[in-house]
Length: 101
Image (cartoon, rainbow, N blue to C red; front, top):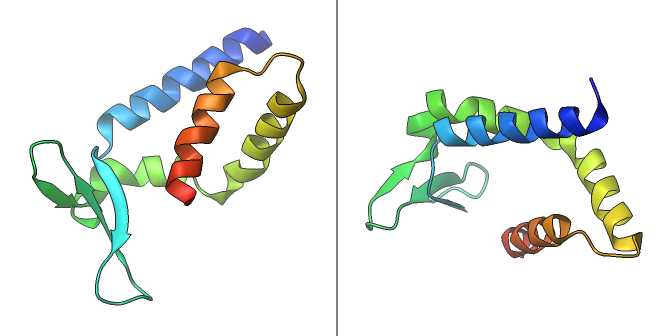
């Protein structure tokens, strides 16, 4: 498989996986610091505990486990060193940076 096709296939896989996972704005919270809840808040004001929707979210969480950190870091570092900044890398970094605080 050509590299371009491989990248596109992975991007499509992520989109499909995200599409069937619990949506909304995921945030940590809860009463116990050692076992925080993750709640998805929706634009209509409703909310859903992600744990209650784990059948739809488990693959998403597993796909973005810590094992993807090294390649994402390498990609962002590479994009930062490129002559022209990749707009997709910049957008990803901004969204993730917002989530990381």
